[in-house]
Image (tube, rainbow, N blue to C red):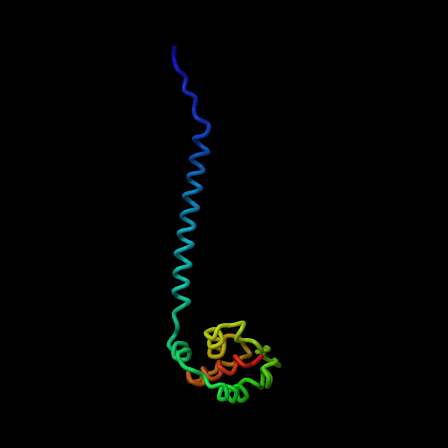
Length: 131
């Protein structure tokens, strides 16, 4: 008597499942690699920010700088006029982000400001008091 081999109907779904798992593992690996590259790139500080963040700021001098350079657009109390409200900005944005905003000029009509690191540290200290 001849034996008849019946193909297993579970072989094809098992192969598909294995292929899907392999694809998901590959996507997860690539995603993890991209996240690591992004994290290391984001956490590197430019020399200006590094110098600024290494200094202690003086609130009173930062207040003077604010009144001279910023109050015309952001209001004497940082309440916002032409420029946005800056009250509580230090709780919403990192010092690094604030530094970038001030020196970059990437969001017109805000001009690009060139200020020495100590002045920027002073301004950051002052902004932490604006509530």
